Image 1 (cartoon, rainbow, N blue to C red):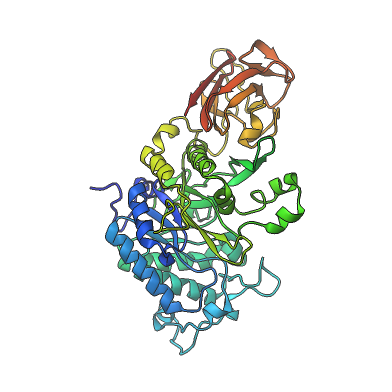
Image 2 (spheres, rainbow, N blue to C red; image 1 turned 60 degrees about the horizontal axis):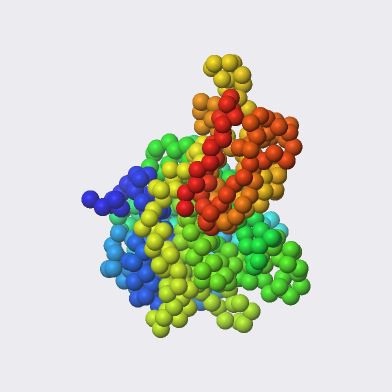
Length: 507
């Protein structure tokens, strides 16, 4: 039986099989190069296509939209029936999309309401004026917004979609106390999917670290874009990734308690390149303006091909070692905005060809990483614990208390998203792994010579290094850290009672 088999239930190992072969395939249901996209999907072994259908602001053709969504789903499933396609229900609605749509009788029935001959009411979907982030945001405490979400979700299920991305869920539930409204919609869609979905199961994620009510997660896994830290001493527009929280736990929709639910990272889009920033900001100002004056995918697409391949490799390794519960949704297809010329552009992983003239030629790099898998790097991963441990733990031989906080510091820190020589950094804080030992794994994106030391209790008055046999104070006695290749995985372990430091590397 295939690792991806499920019917009605999806144990965590099956869910992780799909997330470990995931891609962002934004609006692939509308792709002009669908045949070539499918070729790349089969070549790379992708099994989960996120954001495959949905609208932010539609073209007014509701029936045409769902016809395209079904046509693409049928074609993709004919090539590989195991693939999960994800649809989107976002934190925005527009009058021109909502008001032309008649409310089907089955929506009224689902909510226990008498049927009416009317269209969806745009105004009734919204927050009261001045109470939300923007004017077109649906308020999921409103019944009409719940009906709209349920309507669209059910139609995607009928088109063959088995997953939903729910966008910035904490925004549109701002007045939905206890998440009652969105929780009701999700449960209604789960119930419909249990009867009508391709494999009698639909799964949900949103931009959230945790969405738990009465101990139970509303989501099957959490999802977030990456967080970055700019690097200013390298040519070009370089950056490194920084962990910003981890996935919370709770009772999963499968009824199993999980200390941490799976987590999916992505290169997000929200507007493309900011040409005003390039015209009016300094190099340093742009470095701190989003992703060098753009969104994530437009920054990525703007790099040279070799640099894009290196960053894919870096992102994959970073995800594997920084979050044992995390996975990376490779960018298969993602919107880039207009690029200033008024023409919408799209990133495609595909090799550039007549079949896909917008290809960015990342398919071989992605295929290599997906074939290799996460296991090699998971062996070096930081612990999955949500805290650092080491609280009130004493050495059994001497009774000496182990430090709760131990930090790696040195010249390497800016390349993992911290400040150089910051002995109190939370970014490079080590995890207590038991028996008086601490460890930290990170990915160094650039080869070179660096220095480092260990700070116990987060202070410069009690430091240890590979270059000095006894504890010291200050920053002048650090050891060397030699990185032979870009994107080297580094694991440093420290034994408190003996001051032993070991360094392991993996490329």
